Image (cartoon, rainbow, N blue to C red; front, side):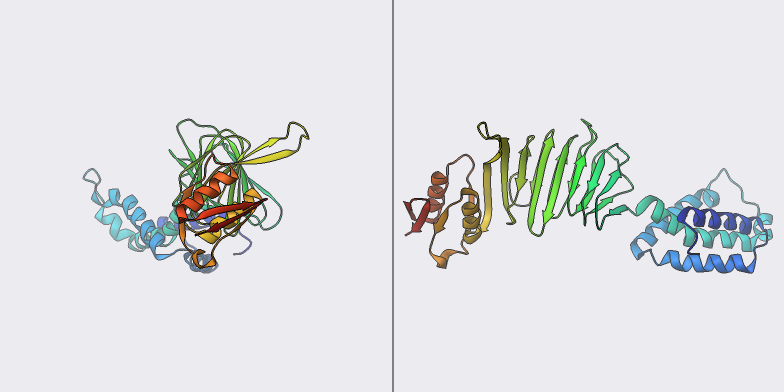
Length: 315
């Protein structure tokens, strides 16, 4: 049945089911095709979804057997015993498949090479970049619009003051009400670039970051680290320049803190190697290079010596 698409299979199965229940004859070929399809369909069902699907089917059948307003004809039961049994069996085997695929199984959009544009039901548009995967539940859009992302993508979110849009990525989430932003994920390094509107970025162990247009949130590839960078054109050259607005660490090894500071401040910091794994919790928001390194030295109980653009931390 490989030449059938999903919709054709669905139509075929339900037409055949209707004929069996009504007592019409079915050919051996049709029965064979149905049996083959059932085997292939059930391969996609795990135990949890099969159980949930059967419960939904039973719930749908209950009014026909327990309602006080409905009297089931004993003659009818005796007249069509095999048809009724076939109907119930089909509901369990096929109902589970259709319930799962129609109401439970999320929609997954994948792009291996090139870009792929996904239009969501709320009017939002997602541009998946190469290697990205977007998962959208069947309940979307709900009171809270939730999607899951692997890889990189650009989101143009339909505005809604009452229905937040949340993107869950690898270890962090981005919450918006309607805006345009880009999520990047490369190994441990995560980033959110905001083009329009406002977003809130949450990551485990660090404060929530609120972005404005032309700002970026990133963790610099270090767990429990959060930073906000602002981008603006230079008034003289017109080239885009960046400014580190906030930088926070929560229980991060000193060697990783030093690496981030050196990379962002274009400086070199020397310190005793025996303490490189000492965990640091600090907020360097608003300070200059010298002030932030002085703050780090104070946390360590060290002194600071500076020469040109080099700092030495020592006891």
